[in-house]
Structure formats: structure tokens, C-alpha cells
Length: 138
Image (cartoon, rainbow, N blue to C red; front, top):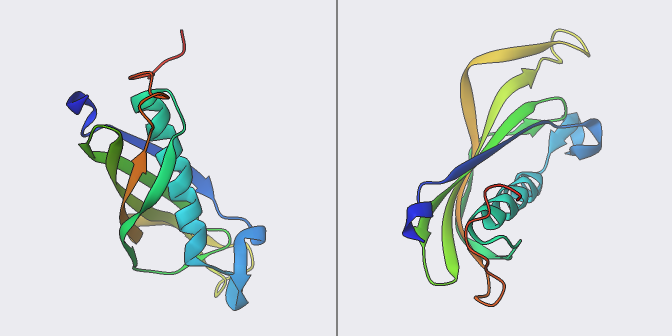
């Protein structure tokens, strides 16, 4: 299964007002970790045909704030395939940011996406549940 190392998936989304947790429409860092959970689930389905279990993080770095209305792109890449564990590198990038200083509806597309959160974690798929690579439905 080492051929799956380097496999990446991406997810893009807009953060809504419902995602804001603090004053100034600030979105808490835990929301980014929730997005990482979805990325890991997709990777597990690709590698094993099963959602598996996200066992934990080796490290998490919160590098910049997120706000309601921001557009983000999450990316997860398999760094290592073990017997039943898979190590994943995760990144969350801000691509569009709100501009409340200009108006309630102003936003800017960033020339250079901004790395907001970076993490490394491990997911596990029990051997009896693994069906091997499941990139496409039959």
C-alpha cells in the first residue's frame, strides 16, 4: 500500500456566520480541525474503502485567524502508510478574506493564499475493515 503515500485530497468552502464563535466574527481554531476530520475521512475511503478513525494529532499550529465569510481550502496528504495506520499532513489555507473595514459585504481574493492552520495526524483503519484502495465506485 506504500503506493498511496503522497496521495492528496482537497476541500474548499466558505465559512458562514454560523461558524463564528467569538466577537468580530472570529472562527475558532477547532472549526479548522473539524474540516481536517472531513479530509482524513476522504483519504481513509481512498486508501481503505472505510472511514476509519482519526486517532490523534502529533502537532497542530494555528498561524492566522479565520473569520465568517472567508473562503478556505483544506488539503491532506498521506505521508506514511503503516499496516493499519496512516500519517497525514494537513493544511488549511485562506484564499478569500472579508473586508469589514470597507463594508459589510466587501471581500478580497488574496494574491497569495495564507496558511492558517498546519497539522500532522494519524488515522487508523482496522485490518478487517480495510478493502484496499477505493478511489472510484464500481
